[in-house]
Length: 330
Image 1: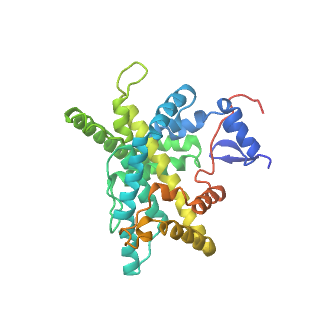
Image 2: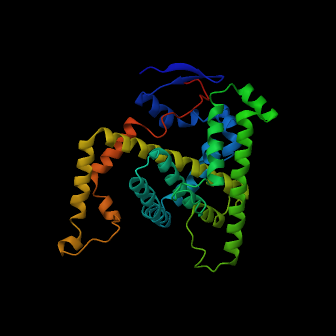
Image 3: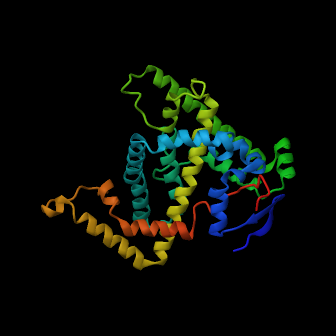
């Protein structure tokens, strides 16, 4: 498919979905197509100098550091434990309450809260407490949602207009400023508290594996501890990346299952077959309640994995990736 041009805000953009173009942009000539000043300026108030708003050496340095931690055994264990706790102790009771009371909910909103809580635990090591009966409104969650919505609106508004609104503290820019202040206050308080905790704890108690604690133990290129601003940027960027992408993928997945009951039956059949292979059933013992799937069992769920992959192919969690052409090489 040939690229086609469209004007968004005051930016002239070309859109393409041709795999050859994508490979060229994201792999072959990756260094030639950075995020660019337009993107960075538009989203800077929220993401500042985090990995999703930097280019070149700064991006490479952050990516290298984060990648090492994300693939560590401790970090994977934290992610697994966090999800198990949230699904069984939070999500299922909320859904069961809806069924028992015959009320309706917006599943996409609930999944967004689920992924938000999970990524907050992973990034900051704190529990926002959003996913509970009644779905209470949490100040940090409200501030983060408000900041992302107002930031996104900038891409559909001419730059001179939103910058004028920011100077005059009007409309969505006023909301953005208030929301970012709430995000910064939360992040600053968590960082301050965590530093105090680590200074008082023993070595065994310091073995937390959330992203904030991990980066507090690391040093920068000059051998000095990372500044609070850097810690804030890392965690806020990580929350933004993990919250929306996962919840969007899950929302489309369940929507597709509702539209394709035969696929749902095959997934359930695969799960039942794997559970029936458990030693408890072979020895005619009762299964543990609640039923928690083990890592080795999840690895065997090939049809489920294929269904999730197909969902992402049809409805990507990040359908648009903004790049600027540093050199005219096309």
